[in-house]
Structures are given as structure tokens and as C-alpha cells.
Length: 239
Image (cartoon, rainbow, N blue to C red; front, side, top):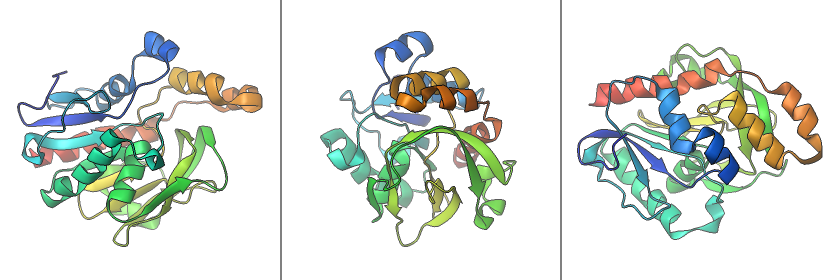
């Protein structure tokens, strides 16, 4: 992967890092995302914004993915606010955008929605998600079954969507597991980049008394993973 967006690249905006033990065993957010993208046919650049690297200009990007984070959107950390303020310029330039978990929430708030702690508490583990009718013709969910499994871990959610947003997926815990704004910006609350071992590591770290039961429920999530390969196809069309 390239270290910056000197050329027009598919840019992965790194919004933090995983636990040290998970990092040593399996890599970090951007590694999982890059692996799930596969041979996407585009140069991929990782920008560690949480680590102090500057954001690229929209015309340097053929697509943007904002990763998850251990931070909370409502912490209003300077680097996080910078990403949030930058997102509208991407949409104005027609740059395909995908926010994952933290990035999903940033997209929602950047466009006038509200993010906060989910009143149902933390969602963690391999969960069942259902597509809304509007997803049937949406390119991000091409080939995804109407009901599919996805890995998830989050305490905050998009509690109120931007006025122009369209809900694409949800479940009983979180009615907004995916949404779209306009023609080229998406947020997914679940983690399409997680593998089974990564999900298991997070359950062991954060599952508490439910860990044994949650570990038994972990399974492969091929439909969720399609989101990233579909996004790569969308980004190629933009380039």
C-alpha cells in the first residue's frame, strides 16, 4: 500500500488502531480492509489521520473508506472533527465514500444527523442484518442476501439520520445498520472487513460474561464482505 495519496487512489482513512495483541496477531483496521478489498485494480493509500497525517484533497481520491475506531464520535477529538468537516467536500466532488462503524457515524453526523449511545447498549458479535427494500437496486449491496450475517461491535449509533438519507439495512438492535446519501456515499455500522478470528478477539476482549455464548455464534460473513468488493467496483468507475 502507498503511504499517501500522491496519485489518485482508493484512500483508506485510518481512524485509530486495534488492541496491541490483536495488532500483533492479525494486523490493524487498514490491513483487514485491504485484504477484504482483494485485487481491486486500484492503488490503495492508507492515511493515518488519527496518527497526525493530513487528509488528501478530494481530487486525489477515486474513493474513500473511513475505518472503525476505539474512539467515540461524541468525544469530538480534533482529528475526528477534521474528518467530519472534510466529508461534505468529498460528496460535493462526487467521490465514492464508505464509512465503516465509526466512519458510518461520522458520515451521519457530518450531514446533519445525530450520533450517540445506543439505548439498547452495546452490540457485539456475529449478528443478523436485514436489507431494506431500497437496497435491492443499490450497487453497494449487489449480490447480498436479503437477510445476512455480519460482525459488529459498537456502543454508539446513528440515532437520527440526515434528512436526505435512505436506510438500506437494519436489525432489532440498530435500525440503521446501513444508509446511503445521494448517489455515492454509504455508511455501514457493521464490519465487512472483520474475519472470524478478529471477531473472536474482540469478543474475548469486550464480551464480558456473554463471551462464551457469543463465541459460539461467530461464523463467516461472506455477504457482508461483498460490501467492500462492491465498493471497489464503484470506485473503479469513478477513476
